[in-house]
Image: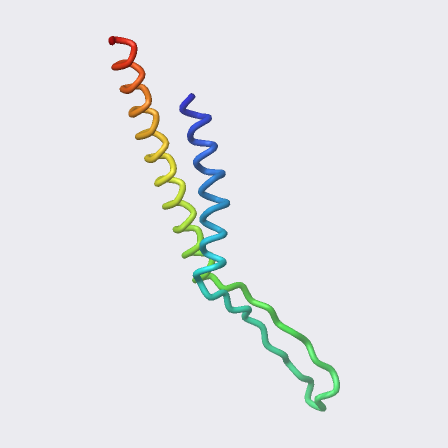
Length: 88
């Protein structure tokens, strides 16, 4: 049961965290053009925005932990309610 909870929390955290990071954080495509000496031939250099990746990964981890805690709290609440209803 715990492995299912962990895997669904990670999957949900990945989906929700990436969606939030794409909506709220400003992703900047880091690319620039290099021209030859005559300016005839050009090349594009693309780089990865490591700040975006680091912040998005922190958001995914935090969302996964939050989902796990909420799921655990709901399970305990439902179990307590079930036990109190079965005792009556």
